Amino acid sequence: MPGTRIQQDLPIGYAMMTIGLVGLGNFGKRHLEAWCRLGYGDRLWIAEPNQTKWVEATRRGIPGSRVADSLAVIAEHVDAVDIVTPTDQHATLCQEALELGKDVLVEKPMTMTSSQARALAELAQARGRVLQVGYYYRCHPISLRLKEALRSGRFGRVRYLTGNFYGFKRARTDVGVTYTDGIHFLDVFNWLLDSPPVDVYAVCRDHFKRGLEDFSVVLLTYPDGVVAKVESGYIQPGR
Image 1 (cartoon, rainbow, N blue to C red):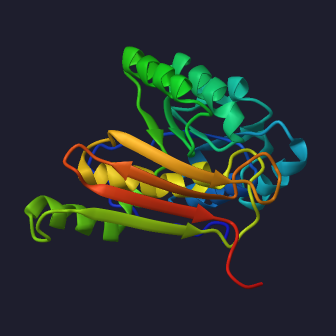
Image 2 (image 1 turned 180 degrees about the horizontal axis):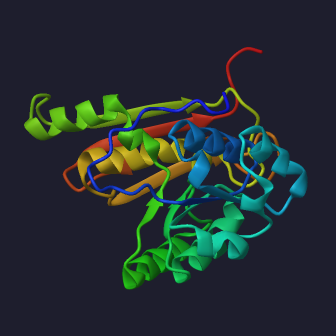
């Protein structure tokens, strides 16, 4: 609900950042709601080229003076930028924000290609800025407890990891199911094992004939021999 806030216990002397939200699409609206619930509504600027979507900001009490059609217009007013746009725009917008000296949170997937991601990581390091991808599964209490248990050795040696991600939602139009859903498990597995895989094999299928995979099975092998499987799909058994 508009105006609903979550109480925050901030350290003495801590100043809340001013946030620039770029994108008011389906997921951008969720980020807008989250920022307002966290108490950032009065410190939020919004960039959205489609002015018909500005009504979402109005509903949350964001004045028109803090809504614009581009990142360039709001950049001077914000400390950090939250990018929630179609994936093919991420690389350009992240680069723009970093070059403007802003910390960046970008929704997953970070970029369309690994070379774009590497270039942005290098730019962030060179500029001394934060570049964070929205892999929020790492922050889930269950994930944090599991990580602690693995580090303590309470579960013994890890041999196999598996994750199934079945999406009961409409298929995205910018990336396939691996990149939008399966990627969460791929990131969590790397994080839990503190290592990227040394070998990856995947099978993808485009049953909907959209030019984007709607089903995939990814097998990963890690340096110490751990095997992981990630299965993702928009197609469910039954109707």
